[in-house]
Length: 608
Image (cartoon, rainbow, N blue to C red; front, side, top):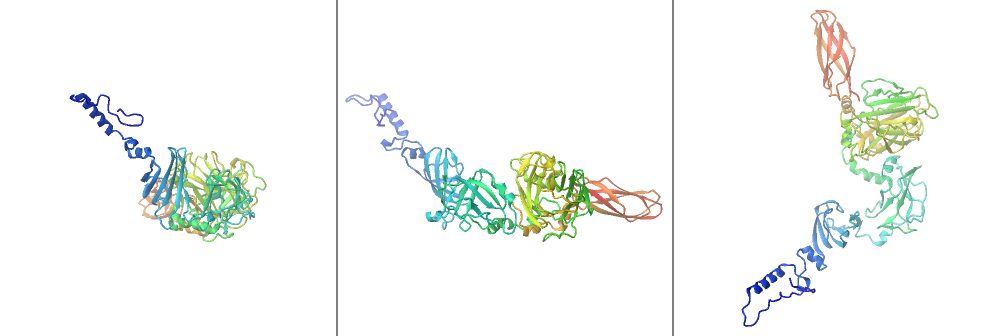
């Protein structure tokens, strides 16, 4: 097309006609074709057009912004400078899920944007959110309350009135001249004595944001970046943080209001959990016989040495090793169980092992959990979920006991020390992060073992709060609670829940399964069935067989044991052909032509 550098149109050479001469069809047709082509191309700006063939291209060419872009997906949206609207149905990472927003996008270049979104779902509180893209990477949404004045923002300055240790539920700073990096002290004890050490250490890790929020006005908060893992020191954690506001270091000499109400905040955080029925929490627990009430075998004191692992009540095993020899049993008269519980398990030694334990010494109680019960956690995969273990403990002395979780192959283990005080019932919770590797059975085999260790030598000691590829049941800081004959440690109220929350001490007894339901759960693994029969024997030695059925289908075909009861004219009783549903028992008569009767106890054992 014959346009010049200024986009001015000129007809093709030879187009003009000559007076008194007939117009040549070729020149005429060439001119018409050229005009047709010119009219069908994007019109340049100087010719009253935009120089573009699309609306977005036209806006770019005339440096205009786009009106009311419609956001259907916050993540895949192709942004242009101008206003936008997102309905409540917009997917992706929205400032608030399920809210509608109107706002504006600021364009710098193809990889640098800023978007401002105003919440229009709640007109009474029109909060604004800002999100920035830098080098093609979006940052998080940052909330700016529309009613927050600069005076209110000035509340967030450093507090130079510092005392140590911090009070229950409080956050304190270590000096009055915070600028870039400093230490924050966070109390880990609530007013009611609930120890939150595991939860804090689980979250206060390097690179994680620490959020401090006003307890009365949720829109007021600061986000600080943690630059070092938390270290427990007495009644507080110490964690190094970098203080920033909007990407800039906070000015030295400012103060920040950071004290929070510990118990009030915990109540608020747990309201969502306790909104669910307690029965739902109870049946979500993965433990077996956590309240220690079911004892079908009624074996009394059960001893363990040289790494043997006998069951001493339903679901619970005792183990010892090295010079340690321990006994385990259900509760005795003293101490009385904690409020809301009727039973507990205890471990103690006949002969104490004073001083440092030898490398192979060990004393602990533990429970095995079937793979079907733990498969929901997804352990061994990238989506592994954490668990929280709550329990009551009564130790003979103050120190650190150890709680650990292990797979059936003994090659994935996580151990954490739990500080305890002497001769009093206390409620503890620990959170174990999900294990993303290793083999965790999701069948009727042993999916998980949970240990409560009261003393272990160096062979079984590992690093606190770390997944280990070997069997580690304690740490070097774990106390020897087996120091003297008769020194007993007791536990009860064990609950193992998916997630990072456990009930408080005052509510722990409320989510225990009732005895009748716990008995049914236990009978999947061990049951005692009374077999009775009356027959007329036609001849001496005459054999009959009868069928018995278990109250609950068992985990696997059990091992059978018979205990003789009341009998008459019986020479032999046998139990055989066990299945997950039942078995057969055979009877041999002592004399012919007589009635005989039998009352026999048959034990079916399918424990892990």
